[in-house]
Image 1 (cartoon, rainbow over the protein chains, first blue to last red):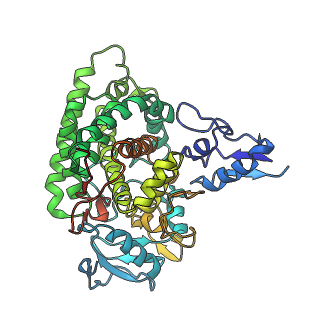
Image 2 (image 1 turned 180 degrees about the vertical axis):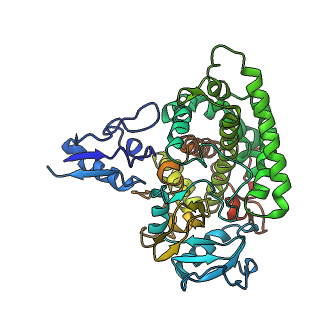
Image 3 (image 1 turned 120 degrees about the horizontal axis):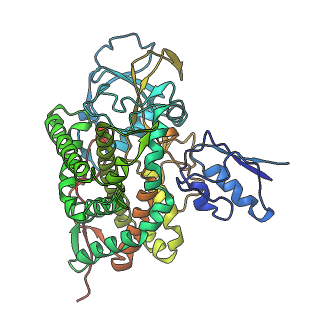
Length: 66
Length: 413
């Protein structure tokens, strides 16, 4: 699974790195560091990634199958 | 809420069959009445035209409120009070649209980032602990005046480098400002005087720091004097407009959320017990408070061009009001939306707004709320509401807040 945070849509609410600190880290302004990257989700964090997608208030996060 | 309803006047324009109302959202009422009203309006229609003031549109459902937030090119933040399209204040960056908005936000973002708040955690906790210790042995308090007003005020001033001894000045100004903000003409003079007081305070603070060659560490006013916008220094007006809104937004809002959170905990001993036994749930409980007890009754925007939006024809210059408090419980978006679910997952609420103007101070607010629950429950695990009288909340137009919350608990002798 790949995860992508759309940098134009993300507003830095910080819910992703709060519920999934193992998956997402943040910068000095409080935005996720992996914005606009296709990020490979480790197998044991797929369920967490799904929570992250559903919790984002801006709907900025997507999961891809390939 | 029938006392707020008056027979609707004919709107000045053809509203195309949309339901019309004439309602003032400024008056205070029994605690919780504005969420009841939000539900009533949401259940009644997705959109209304309110003939109050110059007239404005009200959108009640999650999808439209979200679209208003996510389409800033159609919905300008130039005014966010729909009954007052040309306010006497100018908040920066709150009322600034793209492309300048993000430039101001980037000056302020690091001060309220998770890292900055992490660094402030120990001081915030020490402050909170000392305030709880002060009241714990008394066995009773007015939670609002003795705790909820003082803790976020002193915590916020600490984060921006202002001495806590000035907290009382700010508390009074903030109360006075919101007397007029919600659209009550009787409060306008107090609002104007409060604005002048706040601006004079910051003007003096800037003057005191202006000649210094280096920014004072941890001092936001000093930092602004050394910040640039498009490679030029910020003007005094810009700095004053930034500092003023921070005070108003930073002090009043957390106080309001704390009031509703502790009223909820006072009325639900089983949930209090659960947070003591499972403290890892506290952050989820904080998010649920922000969703269920959304203090922003509605958020206003100004329409930038004629457009059809969710079935109505909006005209350039008209005001819209997105009922965030209704959207955050909308059954079309939420499972058990009208229920408080203390461990709710996937809670993508809009309690801090949405889109580019999302609350700058959200990380501070959450942290303050989490610390407040932890520290309060540690010393005062059991408490109840100490009055038979109905609690009162301020009108939704100024953001709901409990005017007082008398609490009592047993003190070991």
